Structures are given as structure tokens and as C-alpha cells.
Image (cartoon, rainbow, N blue to C red; front, side):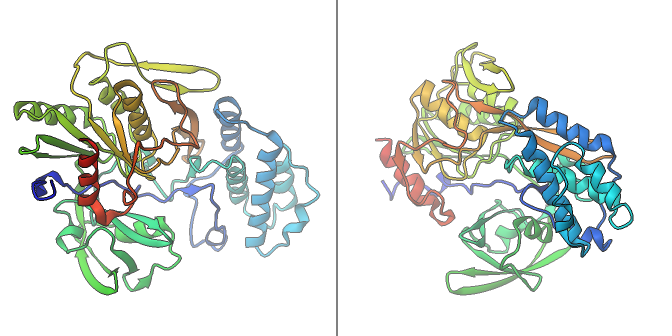
Length: 434
């Protein structure tokens, strides 16, 4: 079969990293704000804290320990004091309750910027949730976080990068994008950007350095095995196609790679399946590797193409209810014969794989998925900041929760996370479909 498997079947799988740098619950460096090298971009008020607190209390689906919220605030206020060179032990006597912020501001009103105190308190409350999906996005980092999350038209190299084994690794260059035209390949490790080593570099910092105004250049050095390669690449405005299609007429096998679930994915998939039908192709492979999900409505429409109208395609567990999302229309298209997944398949992409397995008996190939199926909402806050908060958890059509557990493949393919093994992975899937 190897000799008959055409190159046309293999397309470059792609996904997109967010091009803004959110302030996440992972931690904050307050020093740039204290030294005024960096600004918040807004003036937080007391209502700013109240909005965060009450949204968590009323809508966060997990267990919320009130004391831990304010203990988190106390910890971050201590970190802020440290940035000012003040002994953080001075706030040890403060009770971690709803009065801690006002007590802190009163005690340090002539020593600490009040806006930064509000900011640190908010970070502490959010961080106490221990939920990496919850983030505070400040205006100086992103003027429009919703727009920034939509991967359309930014100046960059058209490449997906991830931190793998501590190394900044190219997963997939976009077809005909600047990185691909420069000869960069999956598996290349980026060791420097504009002469600065990437050792220890945060992924968001790397993305910020690689992206920029279209037409400007960036110099990068990559290691390909033991070979060092240097390239100076001009950034381009990248418009990303979320669906990549291939087919092998001889084997009568179709292949669809979905990068992320944007609203045009169902339509693009429908067009591809109609083309398969015209060519007598009834079996096709759905590749969801590295797919981090996307618009829930897009996923509902996508699964609806293979599901009788009215049947469940997914559920979402909110606080306190579970909501059913039924199939919206009757198309009865051929579902995929196989779905490829890996550790980086998360969110609604995981739910898609699980639902197809449950309702259509679709076989899963690859590696265990990431187990991250949170539903997030972007909540505007007083002054212009945005709170990205988990408001629910997606469940499969069988009401199975994948949060923290993910889903295992029927056939394990050990190289499914390795970007240099596109051809071998699809080959193994085809062999498993016999």
C-alpha cells in the first residue's frame, strides 16, 4: 500500500497560537509595572474586583472556596510588595477575607500604586481557581481579545509552534506561508529569534517576537537534528484556511484535516464531502491532531451533518444545569471512517471525536487526548480589562465528561505527536482501516 499512497493525500496540518499575551493565572511579574516600563492601560475600580468575584461565585462550574479566593489575593499582594522592595511579611496579619483589599490600600496608600493593588488582588483571586483557562486580559496587552483570538489576517510567519520537551518546536508551517517558503520544516527547533536565545523563553514571548507588521523581517535560527539553519523571513498577512482536503482516487480514500473549528468549517467540509461523493469516495479520514477546538456552534453544525435531526450532538454542563444541543438539520452524510487524535487534541475537537465514536462507531487512531473541555466566556470588566472565565464543561453526545481524562484511541500510534511523521501516521491509519 505504501507505493500507492499518493502525496496528494498528505496535507500540512496547521493550527494557530493566540497572538496576544494574556496575563494568566500562571503568575505575574509586577516589576515592569512598578518601574513604569509597562502600563495596565486602564484604571481598575472597586467594581472591577466585584465583577470578578461575583462572576466566579455565581457562574464558575467548579468548587469555589471563598477563603482560598482571598488567600490568593493576599499572596499576590505580597508579591506586589516584594516588587516594591517592601517586606511582604508585613501583611501576614491581614485576614484573607473580603476586606483584605481595602485594608491593604489603607495600609500602603503612600507606598504602593492603588491601581496595581487592585490588579494584584484580581490576579490572586483568579489564580486561586487553579484553572489555566481563566485569565485576566488587560488593555495594554490586547485592545480586543475576542478579535485577537480569531486567527485571521495577522502579520507573521504562518507557522504553528509549541513548547515540546522544553524546546520551541515548529509543529506545522502553513502551506505556501513565509515559513514554508523559507524551507522550515515540522520538527525544526527554534533556538534563537533575532539573535536572542529561546532557552527558557515563554511561548507567548516567542509568538510576540515572531509576529509583527507585515513586510518587516525576523531572523530565526533553527536546529534540524544536528544541522543549524539560519533564515531571515519577511512577515506576511496570513489568512488561514481551517480545512485541508486530500484524496487518493486509486484507494478511494478521502482525507480532511480540520485545523480549528471556525464557523465556515461545516460548509467547507460539506463541499469536500460532496466532491468525494462525485469521485466515488465513500471512506474518509478526519484528522483532528493539534486541534484545540473553536466555536461551539461550528462543532454543533459539523456533527449535525452526520446525526439525525434532534439527536444530541453534545451537552454542556453549566452551573447548575446541563443543556442539550441537538442536531440541527438532516443531511445524513457519510461520517468519517477514522479520526486521528493526539495529546494536543482538546476542547470541542475532543468532544467531536468522542461523539463520532459513540454515535457512529468511528474508530479513533493516535494518542490520548488532552482532557481540556472547558467552555469559556470573555467578560468585559469595569475600565476595559477582560476576564476569560470557565463557565461550563462540554460533554459528549453520551453525556461523557472528558475533563481531566480525555479519550483514548482504539489504535495507538506513538508518533502522533511528532510533527515529522505525517506520512507514516496516515499510512498506519489506512492499514488499521482494512
